[in-house]
Image (cartoon, rainbow over all chains, first blue to last red):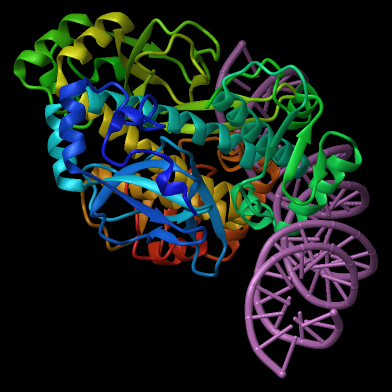
Length: 247
Length: 247
DNA sequence: CGAGCACTTGATCGCTTTCAATAGCTGTGG
DNA sequence: CCACAGCTATTGAAAGCGATCAAGTGCTCG
C-alpha cells in the first residue's frame, strides 16, 4: 500500500492529525523538539502492536488506520476496551508495562516517540501535558458511555450504538452537516464488533440482518453500510436523539 | 453523625486524603493557595450531589464516604459508571455541564473548589495538573477493567470481581499485608451492586447466596462479609490470582 | 403494631449463547 | 479453468443463563 506516502514524514505541518493529536497545542518551538524525537512505524492489519505485559519502550499517536485495545481472560474470552482512531494516543507516561494488547485492526501508521524523551519533554512542556489530560478525560467519558452500552443495552441496541458511533465519527471527519443518508464502510469484522460489544459474532450477524430487514440500515456486500435515517438509528440505539456526546 | 468533626476543616496537613488526592504533590505554598479557595460540603446517603446536565459550579475531592457516577436511560435502566472513594476527584476542568449524576451512596464529605479559581490555579500549578493526569489515567484503567467485567463475565464472576475489588481497597487502606481472612462491610446496597454490575438486584442476591453456600464468602447480617481465602475469591472472579492491577 | 425498606427465594420466560451446517469470497496450485 | 483450502459471514435449532414477575422474610422506625 501507499498509505505511508500520503504525508510528509518529517514536517509536522502537513500531518493529518496535527490539530487533534497530543501535539495539537504545541507552538513552533515545541513542535521542533517533537520532530527531533519522532519516528514512524507501520503495521499491517491483524498485527499486534504491543503485547499486554511487555515493556513499553515508546508512546505515540495513531496517524492513520484503526487500532484496538483488548483484554483477554485465560479461557480466551476477550473484550475490546478501546478503539483507537487517527489522533488517538497510545501509551501511558509513567508506566513501565502495557496493561492491554494493542492490535492493528486495519493497516496502521503510528507517529512514535521513545518513552523517556517524551516524558522529559512532557514535564517541560505544559501544552503537551495539558492536551494529554484533555484527551484522557475524553477517553474516560467514552469508556463510561461504553459501560452503559455493555451493562444495560440489548444486542440490537448495542449494534445500533456502534453503528451510530462510527457514523458520527465519519461525519465529524468529513466536517459537513449531513441531512441526507449516511454512507460508510465498517472498519471492523463481525468478530471485532462482537468483542467490542460483549456479544458473540453470531449475535452480531443476526442483529445486523435484523436491522437490515427492518430497513434501519442497508448493506452492500458485508461492510458497506447506508443509514437512510440517522434519527431512527439513534432511536434504535436507545440514545435520546439530541446526541449527547461527541467523539 | 460526627463525621464532619473527624478532621480539621482549615488545615490540609491533617487531612486524611492529603497524600492521595489531587493536591498530593503540592508543596507548602501551593497548598496555601488551595486552602484559600476550598470549602467543605456534606451530603447524606442517597442524596444527589450533582445532576446530569447541570452547570458544574465546583470541582472537588471525596474526603470520606462513597459516591457513585450513574447514567440513566429514558426508560429507567441505570448503569453505574464510576465508584468514587475517598481521595477521588469529582468534576472536569474545562467542561461546563455534568455528564453524569453524582450520588452519595453513603454519607459523604467533599472538599470543594469553585471551578474557575481551581482552573486558574491548575494552569499555574503543574503539580496539580500532573497529579490530575495521573488520577485520570488510573480511572481510565479502572473503567477498562470494568468493561471486561461488564462485557464478558458471568453473574457469579461479576459478584466475585466486585467483592475482590472492595476487599483489595480495604486492604490497601489498612496498609497491611493480610494473610488471614479478610473482613469488611459492603458499602453498597444490592441494588447499587446490580447497577454497577449490569445485573438485576435479584441476580445479585442469588449469586451472593450461592457464593455463601459454596463457602467462598461468609456473611453476618446482610452487609458484613468475611473472605476466608482471597485466592479462591480471585479465582471465582476469573482473574489470574497474581492480581494484575491495583487501585 | 403496622408501614416501609432491603433483601431473599421461587417459578417461568425469553434473549443470547452454543453448536452446527452452509454460503460466499479469495487465493493457490494442479 | 476448476478444485479446494481458508476465511468471513449467515442462518437454524437447541440449551442455558439471567430477567421478570411474584411472594415472603426480617429489620427499623414511627
